Length: 349
Image (cartoon, rainbow, N blue to C red; front, side, top):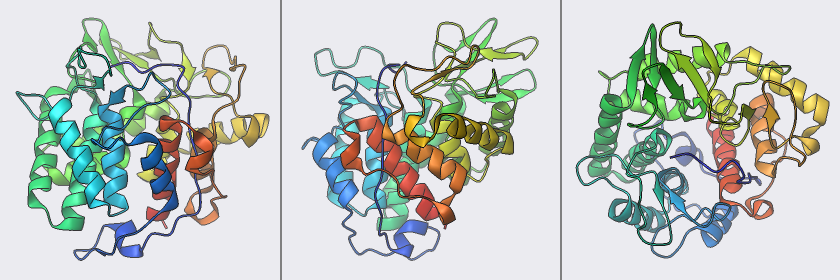
């Protein structure tokens, strides 16, 4: 369930999607196939013929997160063949036999799945992609699958901790007697907004508000940045960087501003913190991680994907500089972040 702290990150290029495919808000969506060079490169680098998305920066494993990214990109770029193969592999290899969620990791060496715990971010992305595909291609079965995932997530991965309603990273292992561990980057705001539409009686609108409030309250150190992993004390509700993890704004937390901006939930305080970091280190010298307690930075610069998130989060779609291309990235996670930043920018125009 826990991701490698050493994996690298991401990029972009100029994108030409039709307005119909980009918005997905109208009842009639353009069905004309859109050939995008970055998606084509992404497929060639990370999508195997059987539908598995490969994390080449993490021993070639696969994640429910990555399968969700692949499904999301395929539905965005109207690629029915890729979507079908990714969904088939996901169902055959990660789907729980007794429910609608997915095991978080698949490894190339047998036994391929050694931990059947789910990852909330992966399940949310899969549900979002299924809903998008249902709208684009008129597939009611996809919408039903998305709703089933969301409803089970609500039952198994949402907890009331004191006055807070929180999203657990997985169904097991994060809710303990003294408190809960959460990952704020799992609060994928646009996906949660879609979850609320799929499951109007569910906890999603409260989670959206609560997630934004958590980010605003989880600012630590010199820069006022949120950590990758956060602990919420059960009795006092005190927020601290979670023990057992480096107290860093890093490869998980970089998704926090991406999803908050995309969901129109970006707190001004986080924008100010990112701006200060970008001014201090410049965009080309962004750190791979920053210790939120000491202010120490990594001895290497962040991959291109960090730059794409910073640019999108700080500039928005109207003044978005040219992002890196997928070809520059060389890494699955980096490329995935870049494509998300590009799509987010398009959809917010």
